Amino acid sequence: MAYPSSPLRHIVSKGIHVVTGAFGYSGRWIAKELLARGHRVRTLTNAIGRDDPFNGRVEVHTVDFDNHSAMVNSLSGADVLYNTYWVRYKDPNGEYAHDLAVENIRKLLDAAKEAGVGRVVHFSVAHPTKAPDWSYFRGKVQVEEILKSSGLSYAILRPTVFFGGDRDVLINNMAWLIRRFPVFGIFGWGKYPIQPVHISDVARVSVDQGANDENIVIDVAGPEKYEYREYVRLIAKSMGIRRLVLPVPPIVAWMVGRAVGMILDDRVITRAEIKGLMQGLMATDEPPTGLVSFADWIHENGNTLGMRYQNDMKERLYRDPNGNSTGQSV
Image (cartoon, rainbow, N blue to C red; front, side, top):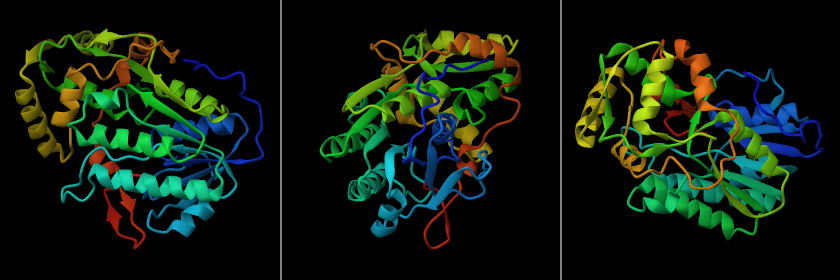
């Protein structure tokens, strides 16, 4: 499938575009789009053992949120900072709560301001104000407010749910479960909406907003909206597999997911993620910004999905400034 690109694709910038976590999922696609448009790209990361898909074309700086001067130096000369940094959950010791992510981003933005960064494109989440009792969403709201009051030029992107690319953990692991179990349980009746957006569209919108100068908040969603039960059935159908899709009480589904996660040594789903999904937070009422059809993509890729389980916890290996392995992601 050919993915859409921006008409600005061949404009070359003399400045530097800094992407947090360019060897991860969304950061990788943003860096790819920036390179395709002729930009000079730098990443801030503490990832261990990640492959470099850019063959050295992306300049790598190790990030240390407690070293302000080093972060200022890493951001020096940057036209745009693309911030994808966040944490999905605490590690087994409870050390990486979302309030730590908020403080780290505050430090990152302080460094960006001192370094004279021209603009920040920041990744938030769809409908962050609609789940105030979930620390993930509460933290996202706090960061939005920090950025808005920072004096930096900004674009805040609020994506729904990603699909596409080699590191698409969510859909791949759903497909893995569908392949291995005769029944697939959905949370409740599954009538709540989900509006997936292809990661190439996310990257395109991100880089377009890096070239903008308007302070803006944008929902980033694909062109198609589904009921969750339809979404699951479409995935199964694309795989050529018939499965019984049953409504399950959310607490039961979470307990099953937790049991599967214990076997796999991974975090399959959190209660807060289930709640957010059932509240319809993975869709938007705004006009879609994505162009890639999920139906077309899943039809082309369904037969290869879910062949192996992608362990999100084990793949998220990072190193702190003292050289120790951690669960904190950049």
